[in-house]
Image (tube, rainbow, N blue to C red; front, side, top):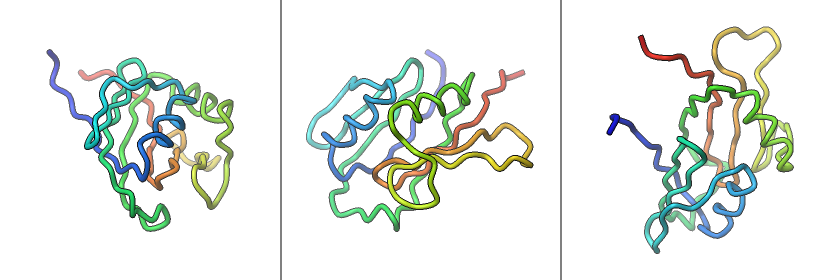
Length: 123
């Protein structure tokens, strides 16, 4: 098995979090009262319960290194996540003059920041 790391993110409500991510193409691969794992292809996000989390105070984040981050961004838009400066969930587009691999960001319903980054093969 290849070495890997998976982000651990808070979920105020597992049902709501699963429903949100399922609209983005994720499915549940594990769930009990204390942990939930969602997968989309080779992406894996792990969630722990945090029912008292205030999304506006969340500092949780992760980088999603994607072969086609623009396609994932558009899948989020198609699922009804809008580009906005405030609120949860929302998409944050990359500024037109930015350079580098960052395409944009998804801030989920729990306030977690997921940076959408173009993956580059190791080597």
